[in-house]
View 1 (cartoon, helix red, strand yellow):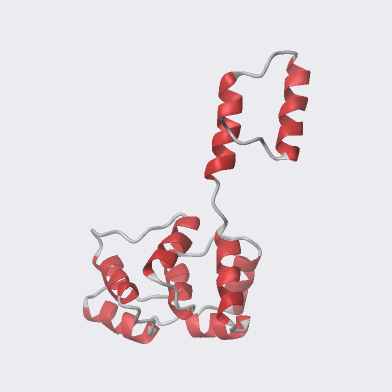
View 2 (tube, rainbow, N blue to C red):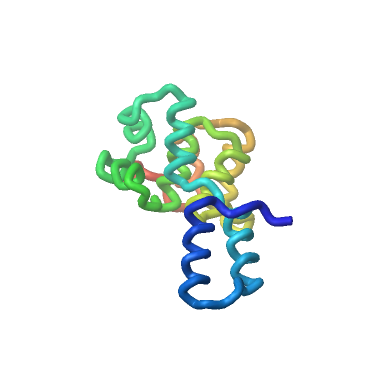
Length: 152
């Protein structure tokens, strides 16, 4: 049995059905239940929860990740960051491989097992090594793009 819809969504669906003068199509209820059950927390919510848990100030987080204040501000506003920025933030915040995967997934990214750069990132995450410079050194040694902030 699907969970009940949140009140605003239930009201909106009811209004739509009243306007259309028809009974609720079965796929509408199924879609609403699916969206309610499967929706993930946003990247923004996940990253700022992790920052709060870390005890770091925002300026320390974006400075250590090598991203600008304006990029960080756009993330705070709900913009999706570039993949390298999301990965750098995961390292700065000391996330586990599982936590980093969830964070990246909430931004629409994943670490591929077919990409050398992603494998290097995963190697460090799985070992709990959160030294962004060490990760970038390994990426550089294998001719892979560097993570946020360190380009030359």
